[in-house]
Amino acid sequence: MTRGFSRLRREDLLKTACEVIATQGFGNTRTVDIARAAGVSQALLFYHFETKEQLIAEAFAFAARQHLDAIGKIERSPQTPVERLRALIRLCSPGSSPAGWRIWIDAWSESMRNPELEATTRRMDVHGRNVLKDIITSGVACGEFACVDPEASSWRIFALIDGLAVQLHVHHKIISRRKVTLLVRTAAAMEVGLTLDLL
Picture (spheres, rainbow, N blue to C red):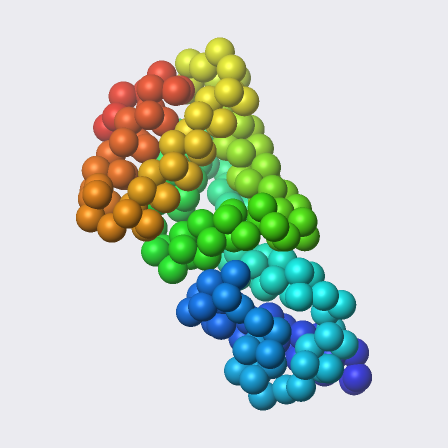
């Protein structure tokens, strides 16, 4: 009973932390802000999280869990490599989920000062790249793709996605969502030897 309540309270605090961070950013969020928004004392906050850094890292992981679940569904899907690549590109497109991308971009920046957050963002980045690499590898194995180095291709595709996300969400109106989507689809198609219409 107590453990169940504790787990529920911890998830409530993480959800509130995400809401505060989305408004104020990682760097401007104080533990007192999260405690006030949650209607609890800072002592209770630190009962669940030993440090602010741990709280921030876990809040980011909590916010990103839905994205990871979606990647997991693509990873386990019985669809063809082409269909899975199309789904992953759509999910990770810089034009999708503006609020989610703002948190990601802010998390990358804060990761230079927060080792726990850096470890979390790195783990999630690596996972996404590995899923993409495995999709490309399976596509090459069954003859759907032509790619000599799936790992290098996964790096280039995600580097483009991440870079364009920064341009789209930080430098407003410098590039359109439609143009960003076309650039990502074109690059991904070229990396695996497909025509653009297939992605």
